[in-house]
Image 1 (tube, helix red, strand yellow):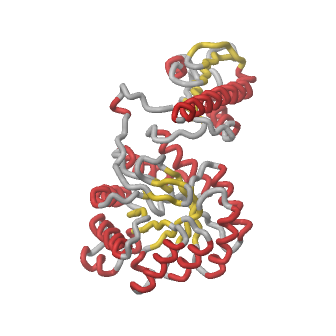
Image 2: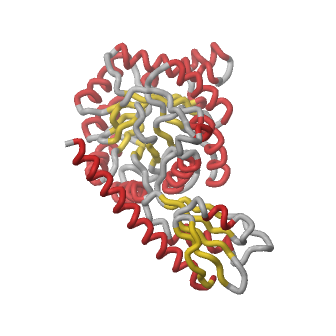
Image 3: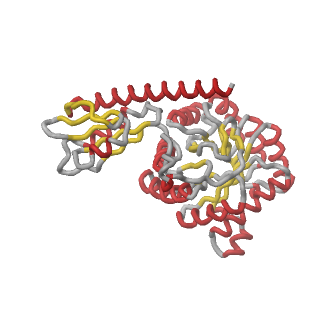
Length: 381
């Protein structure tokens, strides 16, 4: 579902950046904003790590990062990369050899701080390995690990210090004629991160990786990330993102897509519009939505579903969704299809019926999109 051009207040003009590739996934220069996560398994446990990567990919992750803290991890990385359905980013700190080994193992990208992996000679060795093996890089600046000379200069972590750190790291790569990089300037403080990203966006044309680092648990971390990332995305800043949660990586992916869906920047799966419920509800809205969220996880087609407990807002919301159900009286409600009243359905059969209608609508949308793609390709020939 695309934004309506006659509603300019809904249009977001994205910041212009250059494009890099993370494996076969484009980042920057108008490419779809990608959603990332990071495994929390022991990387040398290949089976557990691959299972977590697969679960994240099934949830929609475009890119997955794994930590490579030791030689056992870099040795395991080759098999992880081979079995992964998405590009793998190797997270490197301090040990320059791990960066070289990860590039040799097939990592699509190296997440590094050029300033903490040793001498200029060692940095050049990592850059050469990345270039030789087709790796891109992410410069990852974090407010919690700024260089001592910047802390001495500014007195404390702050946006100016973070951006200065990022630009210093950019110069290291550019001085070695390496330009396939993206950059992040993360902080756990929403205001600090947002201010740093705004400064960074003005200072470089590199693709930007968004994140509020160490955001917290599932609820608090999602809220903080939605506030911080949401305002930046609304300003057009950001080419890829990770919602950092103390939770299952799959939850990070779900939260990332929900943020993008809320801003109309990317659509995947069913967007459920539902009321908080009140005494007027004709059925148990909360339990119904919980059940539908689980039952519809397999639907990847972008579409909308309204579940409203009564006729105060139900008909109006249903006008703007692909499928809708509005509670009524006498144990039944009205089913809407493509914004129009279709038929009544009993509350006790409603969940199964809605799942059927959504699946049917998804097939119609998929078929139409496939036909449009085929026609476009034929016209291009």
